[in-house]
Amino acid sequence: MDTKNPVSTRTSTPGVLSQPQSQQQDYSYYKRIFAGYPMPFAYLDLDLLTHNIQQIATSAGDKRVRIASKSVRSVAILKRLLAADERFQGIMCFTLREAVYLASQGFKDLLLGYPVWHYIPAAAEAIAAGAQITLMLDSVDHVRQIEQVAQQYEVKIPVCLDLDMALDLPGLHFGVWRSPLRTVAQVRPVVESIIAAPHILLDGIMGYEAQIAGLGDHYPHQTAKNVVVRNLKKRSLLQVAQRRAAVIELLASYNLTPRFINGGGTGSLHTTRNEPGVTEITAGSGFYAPALFDNYQDFRYQPAAGFAIEIVRQAKVSNPPIYTCLGGGYVASGATNNDKLPRPYLPAGARLIPLEGAGEVQTPISYRGPHTLAPGDPIFLRHSKAGELCERFTHLLLVSNGEIVDTVTTYRGDGQCFL
Ligand SMILES: Cc1ncc(COP(=O)(O)O)c(C=O)c1O
Image (tube, rainbow, N blue to C red; front, side, top):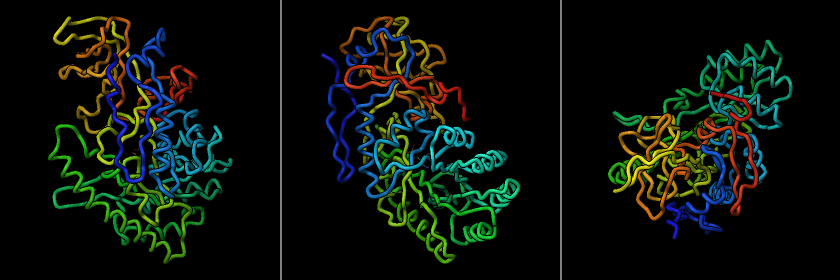
């Protein structure tokens, strides 16, 4: 008997029903599918991806969904996602070179999620050639820099105003450090400089409430911290909505109605959708559903993406046995805690060894469970983050209904490196 898939299908998002999996995606299932396939490899389970697509579309309510390409990093999968639901429109890119590349692949409505400085001429050139790229900015200096280049290239550059959504409390900045624009008084001069810039068009505004969307509040064995984070999130929600609404009002006072008002991420679909002013929510991570996204109270996505490493020796025979695999040290970015390590997924009962973690060349795995493992067998893991998995692999094996149905390239497989 196989150990059951340890990831539950539960979701407590109101109105969103979990779908039963069409089959048991357990260790034997994946082992059989990939038998004989050289490891390491990364895979994407299309049946679970379909579940995640439906859940994201439903959770977005009546908002459009802009796909965060950093959390996908494969042209073929981005195309598949855009075709999957009419609410999915546009891409949030993470570098300008990536946006230019995606434009060359036929993608439209490319919002660069972060400011650029030296690469602005490349944007101007691409826009002059017909690319639909919107640059991010948050200061008068950004406006000046973009205007200067746009003038030189004789193009009009669409821009998006990035608002800070962090909650500032005495002694605590609950959120990320990105845009300095927190108040209407801070936003006003930037808006006025955009209005005064003949080669710039205000296309949208964005506020990413990272402390709600990107921060887990349901970590195992961290009850007290989870409660604090949930309370802070609740407090932050109200302020986020007020801040966005105040800026929309400010823009209206200048007769400005931007094409889009963007907010949120996978972890805030169910809250950002309640803001009337928001027209679209960004989402990416929920499609692959990496390990970090297991740690939220209000939703659960299906573990669609993973990777396999091969047991090459047995370091210890029993209590519990330790199997050592080749590779596996694909650690995620961010504050370096254990939750940035890849998480052993199948067989259930496989664990990293705390003192070694996931290694550059060797990853020991201790295992308690019913399977008899041996050199040559796979251990399946999930990356902590979504798209970073694709920086380690050239291809994703696409799996559906018990077989490999296709193989697609990642950005890395296309020879692209957008770091
Ligand atoms: C600006 C911005 N919007 C949205 C997101 C949410 O992306 P995801 O749904 O992949 O968590 C992120 C993630 O870092 C981001 O930086």
